[in-house]
Amino acid sequence: MIDPFGRHISYLRVSVTDRCDFRCVYCMAEDMTFLPKSEVLTLEELDRLCSAFVRLGVRKLRLTGGEPLVRRNILSLFRALGRHLESGALDELTLTTNGSQLARYAEELKAAGVRRVNVSLDTLDAAKFTAITRWGKLDQVLDGLAAAQRAGLQVKINTVALRGVNDDEFDRLVEWCGEQGFDLTFIEVMPMGEIGADARLDQYLPLSLVRGALQRRWTLDETDYRTGGPARYYVVRETGGRLGMITPLTHNFCESCNRVRVTCTGTLYMCLGQEDAADLRAPLRLSASDEPLERAIHAAIARKPKGHDFVIDRRHLGPSVGRHMSVTGG
Ligand code: SAM
Ligand code: SF4
Image 1 (spheres, helix red, strand yellow):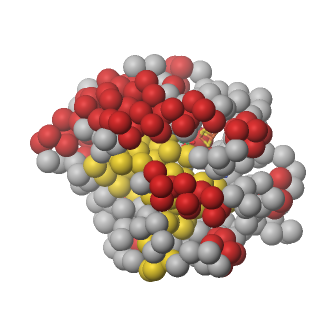
Image 2 (cartoon, rainbow, N blue to C red; image 1 turned 120 degrees about the vertical axis):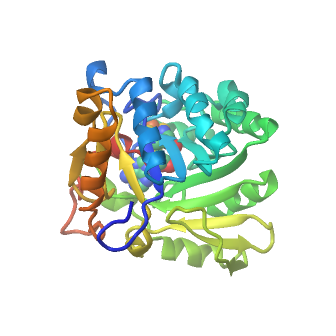
């Protein structure tokens, strides 16, 4: 799959549910309405869909959400997709999780072929953790991380940089991740979904400032290490840990974009920051043959846009795109 700008599409992110056991303030409103089950692809349909993408050239597959590990029987999907690792058609099967269910699933994920997990964690302070996630408990996530380590999963922590919320903890997070052997990536808050007036502008903290602040304490050596995602990496000389920065707002990384996303209803978004989408559920449900599905995928890739237009400033207080991150999958 090659798009109109010559980019090879080799990375698919699939949101397997829009539901979540947390309500992070930057991601969801507290009173979210979730989709009826009939609209959500079954696990078998998700397997068919992912497998079609693998056949068309996807080498890296990330399951996300919502919270992927709250979907009932989700491990059966990981196990099914693991066959593409065994056959060599897929290089990596991974997930992004809030970690709440990792204590239960880490071993089984490893057995299914998962080698690395991204765990979202914005603070090491229990009270602040509950303030950010509304419903989450820090201890549960820390137990999950310990289980992931015991299972031999490599962990990368994702931290959304939130002004006035966790900006006093960045040094501590770098230090802690160094001690634990976790990579760490900071993410700029993105204007996705309605979460309440002004909230986003208050939260937004450009990572250029974060990097500057970190450099007072840490030596950040540039590297060309890439994971196939949009992060740029440094090595923290003092800890040996890797530090990534995802800067959709201050630095546009679209020119090297190799990925597309599918929601749990089978809607393919060719860009996280644009509204254009293609329905893959209809061709999937239309026929037992994958031909209509593959045709729909090719047609959509042919209109992948050049890039996103995220902006957060006084004149742009509302979301750039209406859907929440939990819909498209972060
Ligand atoms: N529930 C899982 C989790 O939290 O890791 C997976 C889905 S979550 C939507 C994926 C990532 O998106 C998380 O790291 C979360 O912090 C991030 N995220 C959610 N809303 C965001 C926003 N508006 N801007 C930037 N990152 C966001
Ligand atoms: Fe749930 Fe992840 Fe969104 Fe938090 S960021 S509400 S854990 S989907």
